Image 1 (cartoon, rainbow, N blue to C red):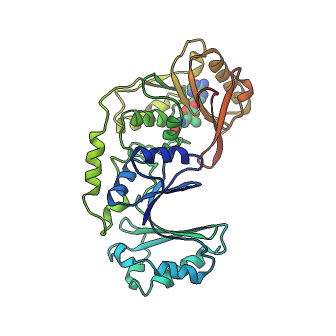
Image 2 (cartoon, protein in one colour):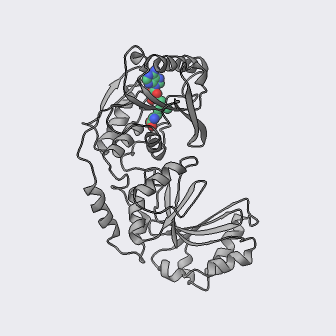
Image 3 (cartoon, protein in one colour):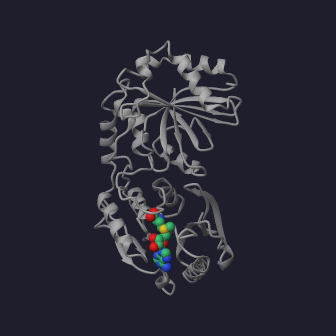
Length: 366
Ligand SMILES: C[S@@+](CC[C@H](N)C(=O)[O-])C[C@H]1O[C@@H](n2cnc3c(N)ncnc32)[C@H](O)[C@@H]1O
């Protein structure tokens, strides 16, 4: 049995580094998925420390060449379900099939029921969607079948501080990934000029302080009867002892004064209100200054602004970068603005929600 972590496409390399920082092995890695070793404490540790991954699953089975319902039936039957599932925890099953012979998701779910009906009583098969349910995923990719139990419950990018619903914020795990991909190593000042709900700077602060992003939330595995009850408290205790008692120079600004109210509530919940300073400012005010800071930002692109405003915004942003040669900058956008830059730049692909974007930086920064 192993643990499987899912993460956004193109953030696999960062996800792997994060797993290695926890001294855990990488047993397998593929698009959007990394496998590491199973222990009870690893389940708690990985859920607590997940900066970029979405979910942590227990892999109950993994088998190649599952190209018929008979083989799928056998695989499901080979699992000792009574060990994992108890009466208080009804099961919800999701199925995914990509480039596989068994394409029909309802068909897979039907086989699942047939296969476990004689292993578990009807009672277990109640399909209540409530907090005591156990979520099982049957994933078929190119005929390789994995049967997984979700240990996380809500996706791990949902941090405790983000309770205000705001328009188009960047996902927390992508924001953390951007900070980790940047060269910021906490010494220099850190800027976000387009901060809106402050996700990037809050994640930067959590990384710098070495605060486990899951420290304040609940997880599905807490109700699993087959796990030791103490693992979460043990790992939380270790995580608390690792918080760095230092302050960092993190600044943010945004042109929109509403950003203050939205972000204030997030920042209060993330315990950063008195540490990070905010200004209501147009980024153009910085064009003729001599910035030597690190900047990671998510400027508007397309959704909020008209085309001519976007052209002007990116031309001024390029002026900011062209003039501030000491500034180390990283920008995520889907607006192609590379030709406006005087210096060489690099870009790498990333998804912001479902949208293909590029993470731009000066060529000597990656
Ligand atoms: C895509 S949003 C940033 C979202 C943010 N990363 C988050 O997670 O909430 C872009 C932000 O740029 C701000 N903005 C637009 N024009 C600006 C300007 N000229 N100077 C500073 N901020 C600007 C908008 O007010 C908006 O908050």
